[in-house]
Length: 213
Image (cartoon, rainbow, N blue to C red):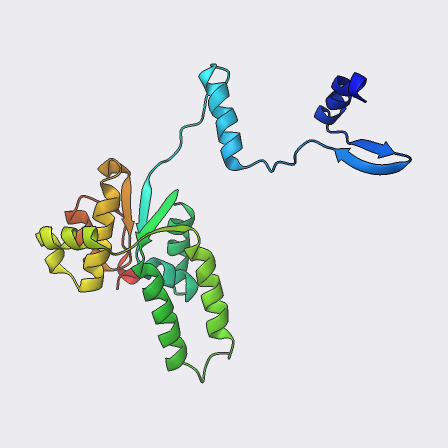
């Protein structure tokens, strides 16, 4: 085998398997290492092609969209504004929010179930929370820490809203510092939140009167 090693290795490179035997008994196998192709691998190869001028990469929408609970709850609870909420959600490129989004939506679902037990199926809450978790997987969450606390303390505009809304706005302000203001959006069905977002120079979704809360 030693004399023909280069030939055997070529077989392996060609994705073939080389079986080594001794006295008609298999004692070893040589195969190429398995490798799952990831998005990162693809990105690296695309960058290489772009660097050589062989590829013109598409322009990507790098905008950030901050969602508050009113949008996600409209989807999960099948509200009349669900179609509008889905349009905003599906059209987003990078979804961000405060960790509050998780807590608020789960709390509202549980409260809704408790108040309507006699009208809802017994597995309603399980199905809704399962659906909610699938949406939450698509969101980049910011935890609440001293940096968020400092923003709340320093931004006098935030004093105009409730505590939970203040945390959402403070989180949005931090996210917005990462990119040009023109690329940051805050999506909500809450009229007060929308007005506050505008005062912070965020882009917001258009609020129809029937969709306001």
